[in-house]
Length: 278
Image (spheres, rainbow, N blue to C red):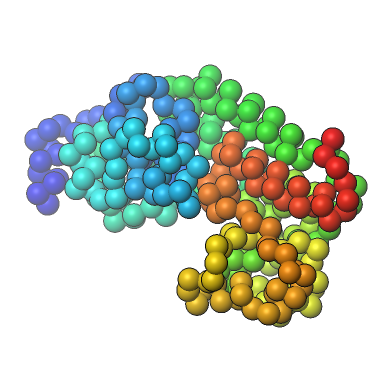
């Protein structure tokens, strides 16, 4: 109630009909990175704390230029932004409060396909008044994906995506499209799984995939969530080799950097089929 009263005094509730925003705050990792890629100098003032996490973000260095927020309505309020970016699952209580305070909050759906990545980049460019920059990034995205594919995949080995707590990505996910673009078949999709689903280690072993990919851990598993990563059966099917490591930061959020995940998996495919990169 106190924030609502202060907002009314400041006249924040009248500010929806604006042109190009001058003070932008992002409170979601995915919008953080898109905004950092596109915002004009001085336009973006704050990004979420996750933007500085090297395990989650590909733009850790760039994130140091901005104030940090933790998705709290109180801290974002005092920044007096004229536009706020959030994800559809971002701090819902804070988003609701900020909307009630009269702030303009633009929410972005998570990207589950390359088409979604392009749409999100285009929308971000339009909201920031930077459509040309968005157009350039979309062209870069397509170029990097084409380069990462490295030509037509004549042989499509079977791959299994193996995450913490035995989760995988099935059909309808960005990871599944990355796997397909890399010239691989996705075990989760072929088993009829959709979204993020459980895929027991026993099923992976029985399916005998050519490639097992996931976030590669250094040393011993630090938690029970990763105990299957150290399982003798997994080590046996890998033949003593490590899993193909694809850092979460390359496909948790969609952007030009998603091409790196395609490149990593495509290189693994080429190794399996004995094919050199053109």
